[in-house]
Length: 509
Image 1 (tube, helix red, strand yellow):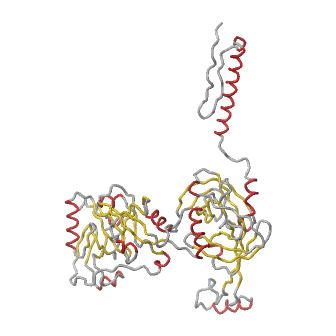
Image 2 (cartoon, rainbow, N blue to C red; image 1 turned 135 degrees about the vertical axis):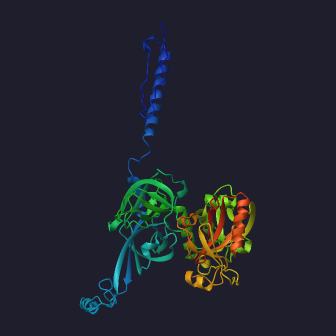
């Protein structure tokens, strides 16, 4: 009598077909072998069920336990602000209109006039320590005269502002409670992956404590701020949710709900939470100093585009191109315009956004190694960082040499009509009369220069990494670039004093 072994179970991709093809008669097996075979088949079926359950995803059956555990640390925030009374019928009739007096009398009769008014606003926040520190958005409490914190238990306490950071829209508040408060901890936002479950809590539209759930839709989003690092989520976030926490499934805060993208004003599934790894640095500084203290390198930079990389002979577009070095830490360390910063404090620099965040997150006064690419070779500079907040209001601007050529000259080059600076051009285009360089007086709208944003009034101060003060000097740099086999030439262009590099093609010249 023949005894055939069973075929292995068939797992069909996508459907997990667990059909087992068995072509034996168990009564023909020896008892011991039959027991072994049945046990093996059972193990196969258990393993298959486990694989099937895993394939269904890790969606929680309920968020109730998590919500119950962390809700006591989430707060509603109400602010009161005194708004100056109207001094006239602004927004009703044009100033100077014959109806202005009539509407002013109407306002006075109805008690409006110049009387100050009280305005209320709602938001959310969360407690981060048992002694009463509360995190929220700066825009929730900005300009407020009174701030009232309502806890999940119904208790209400007044709050004071410890410090704010408009750059990240974060504010730190403090309440004095008679007993230890329930609080939540920050998690590592860098570990959050697209597709992870998250839960948002807050006070949407003034409706009180509310929970919404979704997933991480995207990472590292930037809206408009210098230090933006937003987590995008489809968890419902509405007005009033601002300042509330975004939790991972461990109950750790990985974001502070800040903004939504919506044509209607309501949630359409595109919400943004400032990443916790940004928030924690800000909160630590606000708690210690009452203000932020970010590192300052002292350079102006721009991204390295493909054409700029080609013009400079760079192997990649990684790095940050230095366009200007005003007086400050970088200048003292010997950094120059045209350097490409490729490493900062031991970390690779990918682009300008990354460098700004790296510098800002570094302690003021720290000496760091900055590796730059200069003329095809790398150099390491030691830079002692200053403080950005102090430098922003007093950052020095570089100025050109005092003497400008007296006799004007013009030329049409690379789609640009260029002229030497004169007092008339300085008045027309609003630049300093002692500026040295070549003034763009017109731009061919069909040219590459126009496509790349050059406009009348721009001043070209460098070409091919060399200063240009004469038409002949620009022409010489163009010829040198062609002789070196370059397909484009790099120009340093200033507009209203702000510099940027532009690479223009030489192929059609």
